[in-house]
Image (cartoon, rainbow, N blue to C red; front, top):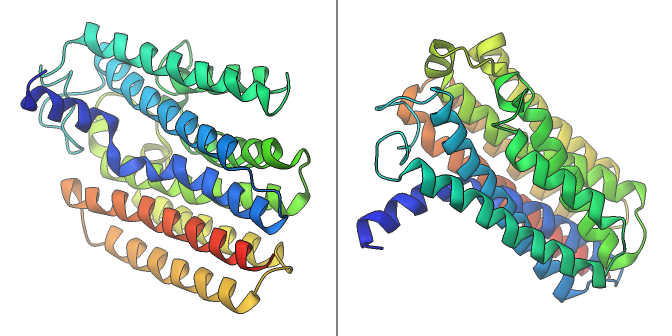
Length: 295
């Protein structure tokens, strides 16, 4: 593989979005630290599993959108290697299922730390990684992408990572899982907001296409404020000043991004996608530090 080809594969992984999968594991690990139950090895394995599952989903999205004629050359979003002819469809399909297979192997090894309940969860994650873009009812084509993100980048990784380390699942952790999912959904909101015209042209019915730009800006802001409310009301056992400061910084960042959404369009929105993912990662990291300090 030459440097140019390697570059196309890196682009297909969509590195800007990968902090979303890391954030869930970090949030859960912070909760485990607060309970003096943190276990580094299963946490690390959950992190690797989450990132690989997201990469496989990104690969699948590129392949199946190309196969379905939903991508075109010169689209507003990041360059698509398969659509542009840089990566063959066969290679992308193979990479999708190879990456997913490696993720599943790591997932099976987590049985050593958890139990058989992980198998249906892992199957759901594997199906979700592909069903987002493929199958008889692709989730991303019918306005269900944001719900899928809340589930698979919030509820599932946070709840499972925490339970693997502690053996139980209290309500405040579920609240943090939902908060994480809402933050993750904002990344998809930016993505679909940028791609409204392209998606509408090919009949892809995302929420952005269904409800328009103004509604998506309001949804982004609602998700952000709801996530802050969940974090603030369900974590009375940590330093509330530090948590309030973290939530305040996140809120300011979210408002700034929403403001820019109203001023930018097309490719100029792409940096906001990365900024949203990094804001989420910074929040989860700060939360883990605050939770660890509460021990």
